[in-house]
Length: 232
Image (tube, rainbow, N blue to C red; front, top):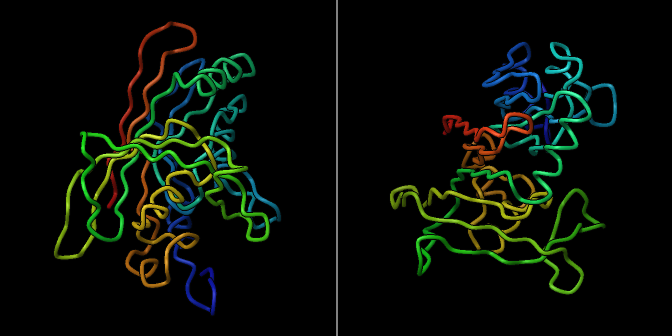
């Protein structure tokens, strides 16, 4: 069993261990792979021998030509896209860079987030690395990179004082959704980086899930759409 701060069980490590030999593939063809990542599993290898198990390694064990196109935080679950070969990787990387890939997430945040005036609200706050506190990111209106998130209310839970929201990152900055929601005063439950200890302890994991992924196939030109059930 992994141990976290102050000797507490590292719940994300325990969750990842449950999925040690499991790989949920939603789509495989000659150009791309769509896989459902469990919470607690790295997207790519980290530093150290204990951080070599990751989604990329598991997929590459079956498909050696699989290449990373984007990443999800270790604590985030849901849909990830991988390319097969360098040509597909360049094409899909360009699709991400030019915002031709649509992603939507679901999160549960602390408090009663007020609905926006329109169906979708917009968070437009520049982000940059919080260098003394890496890997944390922070809002910096002077030096931060443009960062935009669209959001809408799915459900209010007044009994538990939470709000379920759908999120669409227009840009793809590190920890963008987590920092943006924290900046609104409604951090995601279970967030060990951006929530207070009390909010962290309200969930056994970060309640953030990449639910849908939509893109154009780089070879056939067909429009593809994938969905993953929200596990919380």
